[in-house]
Structure formats: structure tokens, C-alpha cells
Image (cartoon, rainbow, N blue to C red; front, side, top):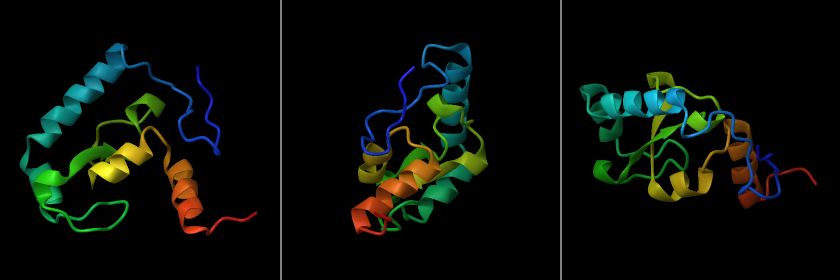
Length: 111
């Protein structure tokens, strides 16, 4: 298992391996939700959940706030529209880790 180190967002602890049955089941559930009207309405706002910028809805992807690899589930409460930049930067960070990262970019962290 890899351990998350705040100063290096490339390292995180994997709880659910991608080859596991549970991970595959959650990925399938996400695909089902993505095909439904609920997701189309959610994405139609065109607003990235993280950076709050406006995008054409087709440019937003589905992101798990708590990543599947960190124990998250494919449920509506854990799925948000996300721009490609934020999705690529967030990777598998948990919300608290992602908040720390965003604050470090803005210079809003304690020394």
C-alpha cells in the first residue's frame, strides 16, 4: 500500500485495489448513473464542483468526491461534475487532502 504524503500529491493510500470485484461493481454503478437523467441534469449546470468555473456540459466528467480506490461508493451523494483540469489534479485525493492542495495553491495554509 502507498501512503499519502501531503507535500507530494502523487502518493496516496489505496484501500480498494482496481482489480477487486467491489471496485469493478462500483465502476459499473457509476456508468449506470452517468447514463441516467439524474446525471444529465446535474451536469447541465456546466459548473465544475471544485473550481466553480463554467464549462460546456459535455466537457465535465463524473468525479467521485471520495475516490473508489479510497473506499468511496458510486452513489449520488458522492458524484459531482468536474472539469478535466480539476479531475487530473485531484487524482485519488480525499476531500481534506484536496482542500489542503487547493489552499496551498492559493497560499492560504499555515506555515
